[in-house]
Every structure is written in C-alpha cells, then in structure tokens.
Amino acid sequence: MRTPYERLKKLVGRGVAEIDTPAAVVDLDAMHRNLNRMAEFARKHGIRWRPHAKMHKSSALARLQMQAGACGVCVQKTAEAEVMAAGGVHDIYITNQVIAPVKLARVAALAHRLAAEGGRLSIAVDSGEGVHRLAQAMNQARAAGGVPAVIDVFVEIDVGQGRCGLPPGPRAVALVHEIRRHAPLRFAGLQAYHGGAQHLRAALERREAIAAVVQKVQVARKLIEAEGVPVPLVTGAGTGTLVCEAASGAFGEVQAGSFLFMDADYAANERDPAQPLFEQALFVRTQVISVAATHAVCDAGHKSHSIDSGMPTVLAARQPGGLSFRNGGDEHGILVGPRLPALGEHLWLIPGHCDPTVNLHDHLVAVSGGLAEGRIDRILRVDARGAST
Ligand code: PLP
Ligand code: MN
Image (cartoon, rainbow, N blue to C red; front, side):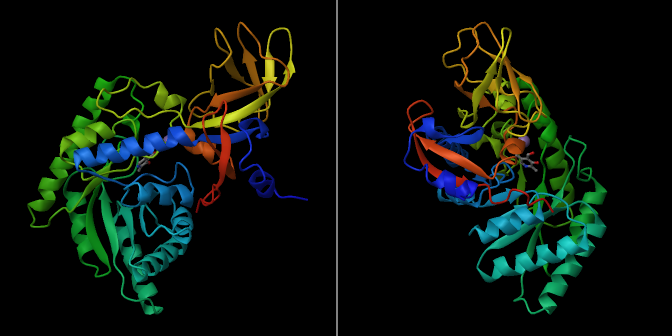
C-alpha cells in the first residue's frame, strides 16, 4: 500500500483536477510573486528580512526564501529550529523564550552545531533566570566537546501586545548587562514585535500602533546606549505592519511570515498603500459530498483549516452571489448561497489563518499555472509539523 506521500508524489506533472480532497494547495505563481515583492521591498528599504518559518514549517520553503534574499529564518520553537537546521538552513532565530533546561540543552547543542558549520543560532530572552539557564546550557555544551560557540541573544521588550518582553526601562538595561557577563552569549539587540497590531483593520490604526512601538524601541535603545553598550539590531514586524517598521528607521530586520501565503484575516485588513501587494497563495481544495434543498456540504472541516480567525471564505469562481462557509464540524463544511454547487463539484477555500492551517497538513500540493488549468509541480513536506517542543 502506498503512503500518502507516495500517492501525492505520483501526481507530480498531472493536472490540478487530480488532487484528492481535502488538500492544502499552494499556488506557486502567486507565492513567487509574493516572495519577489518582499525581496524588492526589503532591497528598496535597505532592511534585512528574516521570514517567520512558523508559518510554513517547511525547510524547503525556508531555503527558497533565503535564495530570494532572506538573511535566515525565524522560528518559535526549539524543535522547529532543529528541523530547519536538518533541512540545510544555517541562520536561525528562535523569537521566543526558552526556559526548560531540557530544551536549553538542545538549543545549546544546536548553537554549537550551527557555529561549526559557519552558521548561527539566535534566541530571545526576557528574564535574568532565562539568561542564566541559557549560559549554563552553553557552558555545558562546550564542556561536552563542542567547538567554542556564541549564541546571539535578543532582549525582548513588550511593545504593546502584553505577551512576552520587559518594559523599555531599567530591567531591560539590567538584562543586557547580565547577557554581557556570559562569554558564550552575545547581546545582539532588541526583539520588538507587536502581534496585536497586525490585524488592526485600518491602515492608519496600524501606523499609530507602530508609531508607539517605535517610541518604546527608541527609549530602550537610548537607555542601553547611555551605558556605553551598542544595540546592534532591532528586529520585529509581521505582515500587517512591516511597512511601518521598515519606514521607521528604528528597525534593521523584519520578521513577517504570512506574506508568503496570506489568508482571509489578512485580506480583511485595509491595505496600506505602501505595502507590497501580497496575493492569496494557500488554498484548501474541497469537494461537495452532499447537497440538500437549503445547503451543500463539502469535505473540509476544521481538521483541514483553522477556524481561530474565522471561517474560510470560498473562492468565487462560478458562484454568482458567492457561497458562505459555516462550520460543519471536524470534517464537514456547510455551504449556503444563492446558487448551490453540484454534488461532486470542487471548490477552493481561503483559510482564515495560514499558520495553523498549514500545521494541519503533512504536505502541501504545489501547483504552477494557476488553480484552474495548472499542473502539480511538487509536493512540499511540512517537515516541522509536530515540531512543537
Ligand atoms: N514575529 C513573531 C515574534 C511572531 O510571533 C509572528 C507571528 O505571530 C511573526 C513575526 C510573523 O507574523 P505574520 O505571520 O503575521 O507575518
Ligand atoms: Mn499567524
């Protein structure tokens, strides 16, 4: 019996119509346009881009982003970093706090492995205890026979989301000094990401939110520099606000991830005129399996797409008046509208939120030539799926 991957591989070169459902499908042409627009945007603004790989969880896509000019990738989890490294990505930043010694031992081992290959691992911290534990793990990894390695450490400041991070004040400065007391740690700069600002619908609201972020960054930078310590880099920004951080002059690196695939939640944002046009590139292909007088039912439920940011929208192809999607459970979607689709008809869903949608799939079917007439170009493994520790 064939594995699901073997079955999918057999489809390479065949038409889109042969994709079995439900399936996560990437429109490669749209994805490449997104990639090129981001690369061009970064070049124009003289800013580095380090896309967040938590979105696609694919080392193949991470490598593709680096070929297009990304300086490396961000990840959220130690295990994601390990998968990216195994997949040939050598510059990885864990934009998150790691506290468990069992994880820090893996972080330190990976930092040594990447350094030996000429690469680099970076990490965020927001506590003295976190710094102490990280230093201990680095020292232990060194003692275990690693070549001397340094890990880049960013101090996370809370710039408005109320998640991780210290206020831009004396505690942040003290943490910088604490980092500098440990030889295997290098103070690399500030992590300043405002997740809550990404989906403020009005472009002006997002601009105002990031203006406040920039102020906080500047306060932190001044306090640190006043002690004679340079701040090498400020990193942050997601797809919703990257134009603001890039234009601010306060940030040296942007971390946007969703721009590559996009989703219905980002499509609902008013586009900032300065933002590159990012197109929808991730779809869930689904088939109508039942039709009633009042509704139709398709084979994609919330095991095929996330629903944390709302239901998927239905790509309007041959549906005058459109179809709306209602949750029908794990494996069903309920479709209502002025013209119901026929039994057996295929539809394309635009997921509400790309990251958790990708995380539901082992593979992405990558199509070139468009969704209507295209061919299956390759099967992308979501190799960091399940890499959550
Ligand atoms: N940076 C950090 C720390 C994040 O948590 C996220 C997403 O949540 C991003 C960057 C990327 O944001 P987006 O995928 O919305 O572009
Ligand atoms: Mn997201």
